[in-house]
Structures are given as C-alpha cells and as structure tokens.
Amino acid sequence: MKPIWIVDDDQSIRFVLEKALLREGLPTRSFTNPREVLAALENATEDDGPQILVSDIRMPGGSGLELLEKVHVKLPGLPVIIMTAFSDLDSAVSAFQGGAFEYLPKPFDLPKAVELIRRAVEESQREEVAEERMAAAPEMLGQAPAMQDVFRAIGRLSQSMVTVLITGESGSGKELVARALHKHSPRANGPFIAINTAAIPKDLLESELFGHERGAFTGAQSMRRGRFEQADGGTLFLDEIGDMPFDLQTRLLRVLSDGNFYRVGGHNAVKTNVRVIAATHQDLEQRVKDGAFREDLFHRLNVIRLRLPALRERREDVFMLTRHFLQQSAKQLGVEPKRISDAALQQLSHFSFPGNVRQLENICHWLTVMAPSQVVEPKDLPPEVLSATTEFGKPLAPLEKAETPKQEWAEVSENAPATSLPESFAPTAQQVALATLEKNGQGWESGLEAEATALLAAGRSDVWDVLTRRFEPRLIQTALANTRGRRIEAAQKLGIGRNTITRKIQELHLE
Image 1: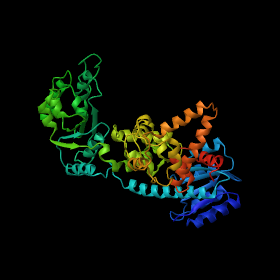
Image 2 (image 1 turned 60 degrees about the horizontal axis):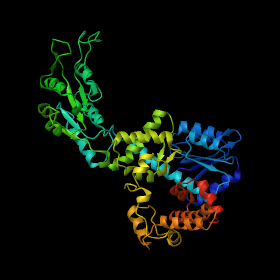
Image 3 (image 1 turned 90 degrees about the vertical axis):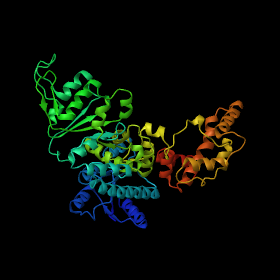
Image 4 (image 1 turned 120 degrees about the horizontal axis):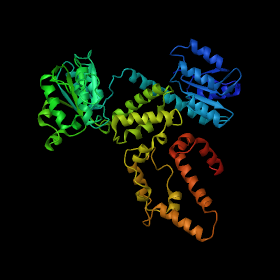
C-alpha cells in the first residue's frame, strides 16, 4: 500500500500521527514544509506516491491551501485532509473550494483523526477501482442484462442498413443508441443528423426535414437544404416520431419508400441515400388505433425495434453512471471530481428516476456544484431524492401518517436497547424492532405531547430544555451504539456536524 504523506512543521504532530497510523498498519512519510512535498512528488513513482496527503494549513515557507492547489494539478484524484489550529470559516471554505477531502481543526481527537484518514484511504482505493473501470468503459455504460441485450442488438446491426425504431421513456438515452448504431455501421464516415420532431412547430417542420426553395414562403430568401439532404450518405435520427403531424407522415413514408422528396416550393425531385433511425416514448400501436399515426408508416419504421429500459429497470448501472457523470461534470466545470459514498449510492440507486439517465446526469451536475464536501453522503443528495426514497427505496410516509410504535415516548427512550437496531435501518427491521415496544395503542408522538401538556399545565417555563435534555442523550447514545462509538459516523447518520456531536457529548456529560 502507498504511504500516507504528513506535512506539518510541528514535530510533535508528525510523531503522534506517524505512531497512530503505524499501529493501524498504515505506512507514512513525513515532511516539514510544502517545498519538500512538491520536490518528492517530482521524483515519485506510481507505487511510492501518496495514498493520502494530510497537511497543515499554516507553515513556514508555504500554505497548505497553496500546496493543495499544486498537488491537485499533478494528482487530481488524491484525497487531501487539511489541518489547522485556526478553526475559522474562511479556512474551511477555502479548503473545500480547493478540493480538500476533509477539514480537521486542531487540537484534534487522535482516534477521530485516524478514523478520518482511514475513511479517506478507503474512498481513495474505491475511486482507483472505479477509475480503472471507467477508463475501460465504452461510449455507452451498462452492466444490467437489459442493457447487455441492447449492446448485442447494436452489434448484430453493425453491418446492416435496416431501419430501426428505438422505444423507451424520455431521458433513457435513445439518441445515444442511435449514435452507436451509426458509429458502428458502414455509414460511420457519413453525417449523423438528429432532429426532434416534437420540438419544432408544425409550420416549420416540413422545411426543416425537406428544405425549401427560394421564395417558397415569406422569409425564404434563399434555397435551403433540409435534414434529409444534409444526412445524405449517413444517418438521420428522427426523435419523438410519434409526435409528427399526420400530413407530414405521408411525405416521410414516400421518402422511406423510394428515397425521393421535394423541397417546399420545389418542382424537381431530390434523391437522397439516408438510413433512418426513429425513436419515441409513446405507444405507437395505440397511436395507430387512435388514428394519430399512419399504420403503413409504423410498419415501415418498425423493421427492427430496440426497447431501451428505464433506469429503474437497470438499478445496478446507477453506480457506474453516477461516477461517470460526476467525473464528466467536474471536467466541464473545471473543478475537482466529487466522490460518492456507498451509502449515498445505495440510496440513489433506489430512487425511481422518472427522468431516467438524463435526470441522473442532472443530479450529478447538482452534486458537483452543491455538495458541501468532496465526499457525497446521503444527506447531501438533492431534495427530490431525499423526499422520495428511504435508504431502501421505499416511499417516505409523512410523519403524521407513518406507522409508529405503540409506546409512550418516555418509555421508548428509556427501554429501547441501544444495540438492537442494525447498522442500516431497513424499514422492515425497524418495524420489527419497534413492534416489540407496543403498549397502550399510542405512539411516541402521543407520549411526547402528553409530557409537554403536563409540563405546560404545571406552569413550567423550561419545557423545551426539559424535554430536549431527555431526548438528545438517548438519540446520541443510540447512534453511538449503532456505530460502535465512532463519533464522525454517528454524526453523519444523525445528519449533524462532527463538531456538534462533540459539543453535545460534552454538554450532556456522555463521555
């Protein structure tokens, strides 16, 4: 394993971290200033370079933030943990803007620092594997059986000129399939022209497809070649063909039949040699029954049909697609790529994705801009994902309608065994655990309401503090039991900051 590089002008800090990491089986290499690190990077090989860089922020001869910037030019994917005794907001913001993995204020709790470094190592190793897979990935990604069927079909059609109809929900990647069919066909050296027939007004669509002669209509000041002429010798992709106006369907059928058409306002037939690939999210058979689509055109298009699965039908592909889009978004924005934790990926994979792959790509753009740190955790996911799913993909019921344990609030807090819940709160396991607490047909919310009512009736003016002091310790203790005492992980699961949980533990005397 590659070493952890530690950069700090304080010898005691270096010594303490070295010993602690060596006890964990993590090799280290120490430096006293940024210049030494940059010199070592120049001579480092792939095998002896850093796995993680842990750097102080203020050192003689250079800043940790400047070092972070220079290191990321050479090693864009290297996780960097910034340490500083100056725990101010500006330093934290600068560290994260510079692409730091995490921000560690001094003085730090040594076990917590080691745990953070180990988490960074795990993320680094996971990303290395993901990057290797990504480097070998084709232009279309998919390991799901349904996508493998699509890939096999593209392979079989690679030497064919046959018309193809691609069906699938909006955002599922139909144009990518069309481009792949073109790229792997004998027409690959010809043009690939795409047109969305639903996005162009009816009055303009005919001219877009077939072109027009000069003077054909007001504003037609010169002859214009349409998409069929532009695609001559190549492929024309007609997206959302189900929305094509009925009268234009007749003209399209004629072109597909003999390759001839007339420009708008023209009198001479134009010959074109085009392979047509059409796509739709609609049920064309039903459109034919409804009289909105020509049956003879449907049969002309439906020579070979490829059905593209929705993203919810290929959830195993969410992992590689997410990492791919995060890399892509970072490259477009010129920033450090975000990493995503397994827990966040798990939650994301159970989202229904009504917008399919396009929606996932948009989510990755959002995360690249909005996620507060370099590692995306479940709490960092966008609101539509958090509000629509639990960790296991089941809809979140509103709080007032949710199934609740039949137990008074105070008794739940006192009697619930802290270690009885599993690492992940699967809804079924949670319901089983809570079912053991049934009593009197009341939920904990009712118990809380009763407690508050009694205190208010007694004329107390500290009701908030009284109930909070009873609630917070049990919640924190349960989270710590669940994470076997790991504070950072407990804070993440509770959705609070690591400084907050440390302060609460001290205030509530939970040490």
